[in-house]
Length: 64
Ligand SMILES: [Zn+2]
Image (cartoon, rainbow, N blue to C red):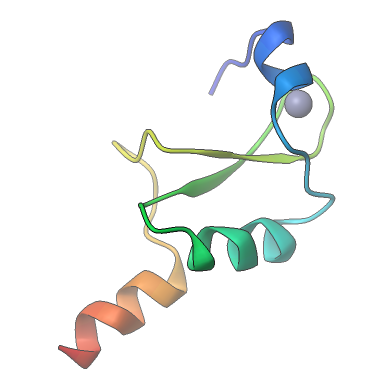
């Protein structure tokens, strides 16, 4: 995913995907971690189209 510089600066950064996923798991809406091409760290996006499903969401769906 392309990230514009303004978005990168404004967003929270996570040094690894695990950390980003932990935050995504607690959020009240779907979030997906993705690697930013600018800072090489992870951000979260609410645009979930085409993103792979995080493990905790797969587990949630299976639990129902
Ligand atoms: Zn970034």
